[in-house]
Image (tube, rainbow, N blue to C red; front, side, top):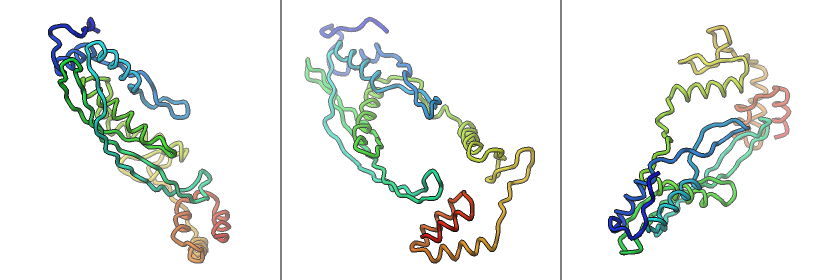
Length: 242
């Protein structure tokens, strides 16, 4: 990092000159944290703490202030329907997401010159932190974009082939002993080119269809049948109780 520029130096006149000074002094920020799932690293990212700490230090030294002056909130309520981990009980969940559009004002307090920058953030939370997360994201990216800070984060670096391979791994975890043949939507038996054939029993299918029709909510019951992966006898007992 270059020698920090102090406020009052003759070349620092106005908000644009000071923004440029910060850009010169913060050329790159390395990713400093990881996202993990079940103890396995998924990806690295640049934290809001590191961005804000670095930019705060620079803005104090050159003489800049920044604050939100206009905020638009867009609440989004998502309804999710699915089955629990047993695959037997059907449940409904509500997930709250918030999108914020924030306009920040960045000001040179010496001469009063200023500039605006707009940013968008999105946050999701099942309790009450969705707005907080959205505002944190918007603030981090407002700073990064204002001062042109590269971090090495680029979604275009991830190829479609890599995504397909990750999906293949997840399929193998769910259905051990199977692989995915390119161009085929069905699982393929290891060491063969034939798709796995699902065994059907017309008599059982008729029993299940009749039970579904007799339940209090046939549409929901059919969803349960479509997603059920357990023993057929257990499914029949569940339907009898509905």
